[in-house]
Image 1 (cartoon, helix red, strand yellow):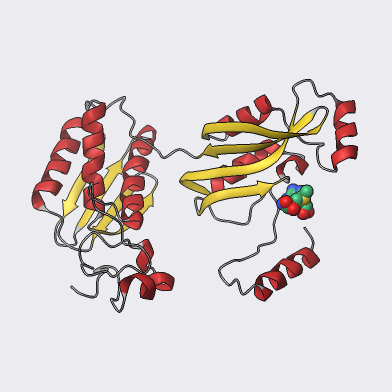
Image 2 (tube, rainbow, N blue to C red):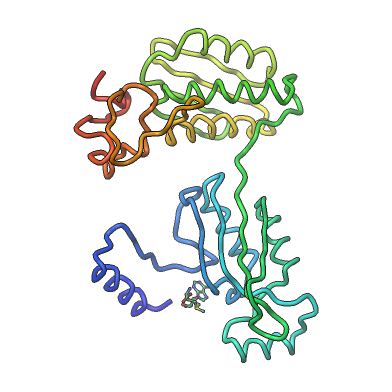
Length: 295
Ligand SMILES: C[S@@+](CC[C@H](N)C(=O)[O-])C[C@H]1O[C@@H](n2cnc3c(N)ncnc32)[C@H](O)[C@@H]1O
């Protein structure tokens, strides 16, 4: 990518009046974005140009949030592709040399931790290669049942309790071995007590305490193997908080929709972030830790 290409892209965006797009200079093998900050990775006929496709795919996985999607269009080489054929394909199409076969692409995605992998050829671009749409998803961490006495249904119920707690959550601080959850109001006592009771009963590897004065829930693990379980809880709380975890049947507030119950969980915090606040929240001010100006 050249500076001229970037300049052209920026001036095209300006001419089109598009102001919610940012162009960054960088390489596929070293994406200039922080970990877990992206919802979707797209590209068209670029990945096969890299000399290190598995690394590109690992970079995509790194930048994606859990649950994020990888959806690219690229060239897929037929399984029998040898070096001469690759050189010929490169000459014909201008972009093939690094093209992987279906199996190679699939295993690079699997190695990077992707799930729900789908590779669908759309049309032939060469005697020995086709264009394909490649989709995959970065998995959301799930609770590891191994040392936990809950069965699958009980674990799902416990995750549902965390989702309900997330509706009272102002922020989630997550560091290796410890998660600190701060509530902006008092979560229902029975919900909190039941959550702690189940946690203490099933998963003794969690050191979990609620500090009512600070409205803080502190969950810690000593065993690094248990970090995955901690990740699952932190993820559930953070994700449900920012996407507005809703009870069954409740509809999320949409941009433009009048919000009358700001202090209830029907408000999506993401919807009420500063840029969209006026759209979805009228004149209500959303300020953590209370989140709602109407308190
Ligand atoms: C075939 S063009 C596709 C461009 C565009 N996606 C489209 O559909 O028109 C490939 C583009 O990938 C860029 N590219 C090649 N290798 C790259 C790399 N390692 N990192 C970032 N960009 C790269 C090239 O500069 C070029 O702009």
